[in-house]
Amino acid sequence: MDVPSKFHTQKGYELAEQNKLTAAMEDYLEMICRLSREEGYTRVHLLAKHLNVKPSSASKMVDHLKESGLVQAERYGYIRPTPEGIALGDYLLYRHNLLNQFLCYINHSDNELEQVERIEHFIDERTIRNIAIFLESAL
Image (cartoon, rainbow, N blue to C red; front, side, top):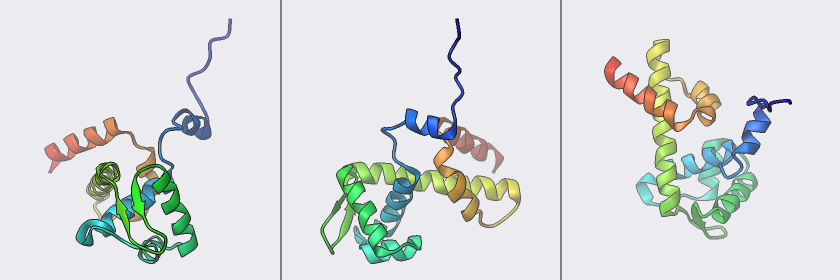
């Protein structure tokens, strides 16, 4: 009898976590929360500018995040994270900053933005906790 393998392709792992946000959704929510910190809201044109995308692309993603209950948005108006969006966005910002701190530490650099952006979506919460513990003891 064949025993099913525990290995999957990257797409297979993604499909196994279908209730999880996509990497793009995480990027947008993270930026919405970052931009909303001061005013409590942002707008599509600012979101598009900061993510280097077209406003139409940003608008479509805001609609997806709205359908997911993570943001409140009015057509051509303000975008505000919901309480659930704030909680998740705060974690995404924490994860981003922690990974940047960790990579700067091990690479002896000041900023690892590009590398963080490439890997942050693939690291689970347990690993983030362990990186935080490591950095607390190392710094």
